[in-house]
Image (cartoon, rainbow, N blue to C red; front, top):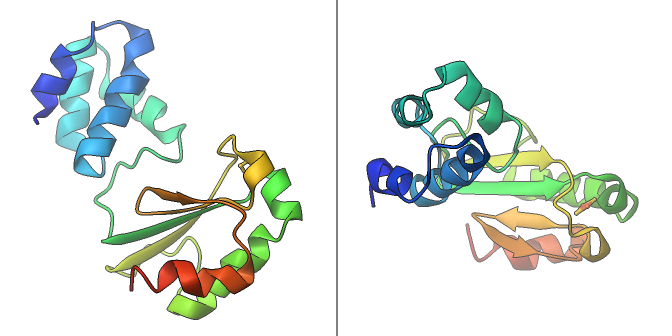
Length: 146
Ligand code: FES
């Protein structure tokens, strides 16, 4: 798969910018500056417009990601069901802090609502979605990844 092949699957209409960015992100793990420029050229838009679209969505990354990326929803529904307890447990388990970009092996992100509020707290580990996560289930989930 190449970015060029992905682009050719879509007409260069504004409504297709997000699907293109999602597909590039899914295929390569992030949207590099070089790839974002290809998207900008294809849609005849400035690079800043492409980054504006990409940065609006938590799930699209513009930097290379570490091998282990954990995302925890902190939307209102997940928050009232102990999402912050889950975040603390993950921080303790991996000896990291949410939001830190310094660890080359793992990153913990607190993200906004994923639209699965009835199943919260929701945790995504390298793209795999876990629902109804509790602080005590963190160990079971993470031991498969570390
Ligand atoms: S608040 Fe977490 S999925 Fe909506």
